[in-house]
Image (cartoon, rainbow, N blue to C red; front, side, top):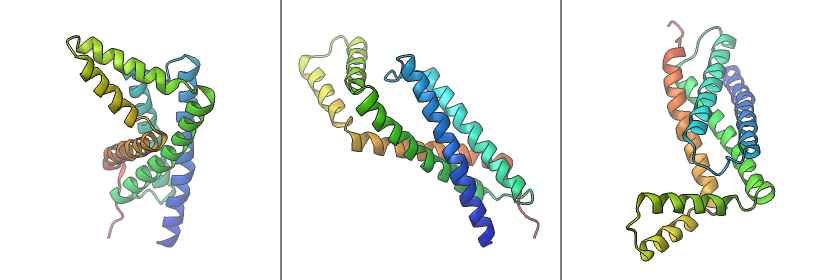
Length: 174
């Protein structure tokens, strides 16, 4: 059983790094297209498909290396571990992006969000707009943003690994 846990750890680190690396490359692609601060649903869908594919592949690889057996618990551990590793890599990339590559990124994103709010709520008073600005600024600090990114990554990893784990699990006969 100890050997299987070591193997699980190796798969988590290897494929979590791969998922984080692919996510960073995708983020750099969005940056090069000047789409990195937009809340585009297509980019979110592509990111989810990448996550789904890499987690499913990692679970399949683990099952193959584990005499073709994998429990649902092991599948979830793989997905959550990968999501944690990938989330940390993405936070590091985000901090590099927002402090080095594009220091004005958060201001652009806040402005776009405020413009979207005003388009959807043309009757909004100046006081309401100031409240929205204040709330936006509270949630854009590096600590809060990084925490939200990690939590979102873990939730996504949990859901994806649960779904893929249900399809890929194969318990050992007793």
